[in-house]
Length: 424
Ligand SMILES: [Ca+2]
Ligand SMILES: [Ca+2]
Image (cartoon, rainbow, N blue to C red; front, side):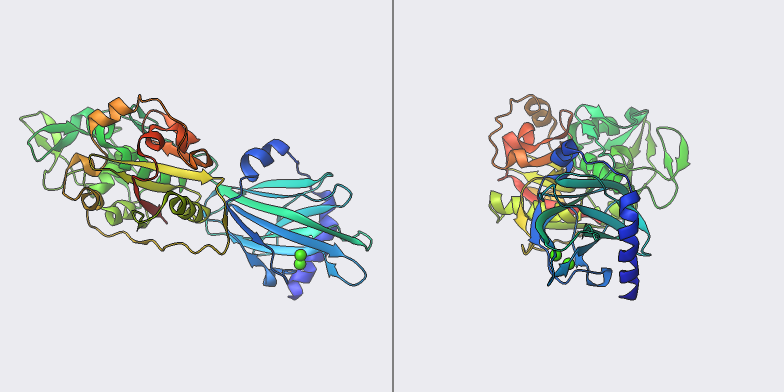
């Protein structure tokens, strides 16, 4: 408590010296989306009283200085779920008063503070995953009595850039030599890694995008056949596919004159604990088949607030499966929303459960013909809530577009969304 008071005195001196910009364009594009809304909870005047929030929160609060009420500090705390960027915005107050944001770390060191005039303030800072930050909304302490105002406070954290890996066409990673390495499927047919990812790599591409957004790399040094070098490999569809088979070495096959992974350990099985473990991550799964489109939108919004690196969404119909990454949303849920709880992923072949039977290539995506033909389908743009979710679809170069601008949204929609996979 004592430290908090000292910090706040420092704030009042320093705020005037800090420089930052107020940018309505940034507000509109990066801060305004309101995913989870809540009211401030008093007392929240010190870091010891800080109200815990998550990424993509919108808080409605009030600051007051009158002869009877002295509430000029509202403090919130947030543990960054990502290494990347955090935006803090306060607005919707009269230009006649001076409200600012000060962000400081666990050691009470000020990271950044806003300044300026007008009806909003905004700061953007680099953040490190797992780090605790405090953000205080401050009414100018030199203000005279008789001031009171409501405000809106927003936080949003996101990767500095979202990675994108395409399966069709292959996009965003090194594909050298992949035609020399592959797998002989249960029908005895050779399938190169390149073809496998092209035809059936939606899960591997989606897994790789999220792991890359999490700034992960392999926990030990691994050999990269594309470059013939060893090192800590970054996640991409190739390295994730190899993690999926435990980085087993391929064996030369004289019939095909190729290096093949054993049929008993096909590259297409999804073993999530094994795959994520090689990148120092864990996976959990939540099955959604019993929920409505609205409930699925709520669930995605909730988990995105805790996982700004993205959520993998698995689709299944009677004939095919697919996976994409949901990255952000403007959908809104209240902070008291209580989500169904995701469970740790088992080593069970996930897509086999969905498909009802074990089918090889389909386990990491779905069939070539569907991918190639439907990627060219026109979009209806009528998917409910489709414009409120930004996704990265491994098909057709759909990087950072709204759900209703993808063939997945149009062709498969919400009904076929059967589960989400969350990495931590
Ligand atoms: Ca308050
Ligand atoms: Ca307060």
